[in-house]
Every structure is written in structure tokens, then in C-alpha cells.
Length: 322
Ligand SMILES: Nc1nc2c(c(=O)[nH]1)N[C@H]1C(S)=C(S)[C@@H](COP(=O)(O)O)O[C@H]1N2
Ligand SMILES: [Mo]
Image (cartoon, rainbow, N blue to C red):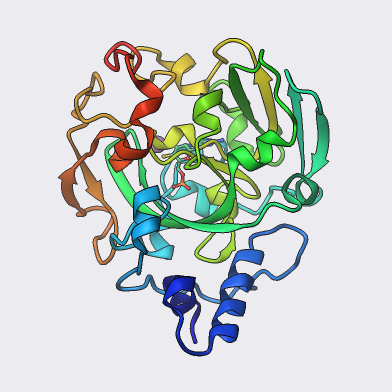
């Protein structure tokens, strides 16, 4: 059985060979956990499954969608990661300069149990999951990606944030030797992002260690990145080295670069255009659709996750707090 089959068979649908299939799924999940050394070494990635099977429960939670997946080859060659160049093809063409081991994450600020943890320890005991999320970039393209990772809340709770922790700030590695694009002032380095604490604790907020059952490639934010599926893609900060509980709205890179164009919240919203382009539609790069000519589809409020997240913003003017 191929990995692609393993990924498309939800546990509930398994009727034959249950042990074998479960093991394949587990291996795929574990491959994303650093330190376990189960990474698929250099083998070509599988093509996307033609149809992903999603249980009603998974659909209700937003954890999986049955929309056609974006091909592995597109997910890993059409990237935004300015630390490795500003062109879409730059990050995947870059040398492998990131030193992934050891990798540690400093968790601190307003919490009872701050610490600097090796990545393995940060994730220890938290069960890895596969989530199939839509990713909508503020530039107007989108993908559907099977991520591997853990709910952000499960990790954050262990540090026991205090009542002063109103926001969570995230920081990317700052080292021009490992990230050659940092020699150029494309953004103010290190890349920084942030969430309000209730957003960070939402079950859809995901800390990602892999995709398509394999460890995260450097260009997708190895070894640890954030994915917040109802927000524009730039909130999904890559190669995280620090997580800090803070009391006031933190500095975020794109908001600082151009606050009239990139808000702190950056929830996907087809009714609030970017000053220089419409956000009503998007080019969906998925299935057989190529990057250049992908079909335009309507953009959905909160990227289609309104049912799950609209409550976080009840009473807020989303034109003001864009
Ligand atoms: N550190 C860092 N994180 C980043 C970026 C970046 O340039 N640097 N780009 C962001 C943007 S604009 C998008 S759309 C997503 C793209 O993720 P992907 O390349 O895995 O699709 O990563 C986000 N995270
Ligand atoms: Mo983006």
C-alpha cells in the first residue's frame, strides 16, 4: 500500500488489514517528529490522492477538507520564505544551510514554566496529527496541503500562561549564515508574527513539523512552523526559535513593513480588499492546476473556517481590525 493510500484512509473507514494500515499512518505521522529518524530519505514524493476521504466529524471541525490536494511538487517549489530569497522558486533552489539539529525553542514571557527546550522535548507526549487545510496567501493564490503537526494549544498549555498572557509572539531564527536572504533588508529580521491568546488556543491553530507524511522541507519552514488556516499565509511563521507570552499586541513583520496593507489580524476576508488588489477571488493551485494558470475561485470568509472561528471576532469591526 502506498503512502498516498495511507494518507487518504481515515481510521474509521478501515475494514481490512487494519494493523498494517494503522502502522503506515503512524509511521507517516512519526516521520514528522524530530529525532525519531524515520524520515523518508530522498524518495520521490507520492502524487496527491485523487480524492481525500473525510469523516463528517473531521469536516465539522475543519480539520480536513476533501478538496483536491496541491501536488507535493508545487507545495515545495512555489514558496514564500524571504530568508532564502524573494522569488517563489528561490527557497527550494537554496542550499541546505539551515542547521536543523540541534534545534531549540525558547518559550517565555508571562507563563509559570518558561524554558529553552530541544524540539523533541517541546513536542514530547503530544500526539502528532494530520490536518488537511486550505492555505490562502494574501497575494491571491491558494493551496490545499496535508500537514503533520500538533495543536498549538497542546504545546502552549504546558508552559502555563498567566492572566497577563494576552498575546503570543513567535520569532524565526536570525542568522544570515543559515538564512542568506537575511543579508538583504527585504523585511526587518528576524521575521516575527503573533496571535491573540484565544486565537492561539483555538483547535485549528497548528504547529507543523511535516507535510505529505514527510518532515518539513527547509523551504516550507523546517523544522517547526505555524499554520493558522483562517488567516493569510504570512501569519504562518517558519523556522520558529522563540514563543513568547506577552501582554500587548506584538510587533509583526508584515504589519510593520506596511501597516495599511497588512493588519495584525489578517483574517482571510473577501470583503476587505488589499489596497492594491481585490481579495474576492484566488488562484487555487491544486490537483492538475498549474501555478501560472490555476483556476480562480471565490475566496471565502475566514478561508472557509467561519463556522469554527467567527466567534473569536464577535462584535469586532473587521474592516478596522483587518
Ligand atoms: N520566516 C518566514 N515565515 C514565512 C514567510 C517568510 O518569508 N519568512 N512567508 C510567509 C508567507 S507570505 C506565506 S504565504 C507562507 C508560505 O508557506 P509555504 O511556502 O510553505 O507555502 O509562509 C509564511 N511564513
Ligand atoms: Mo503569503
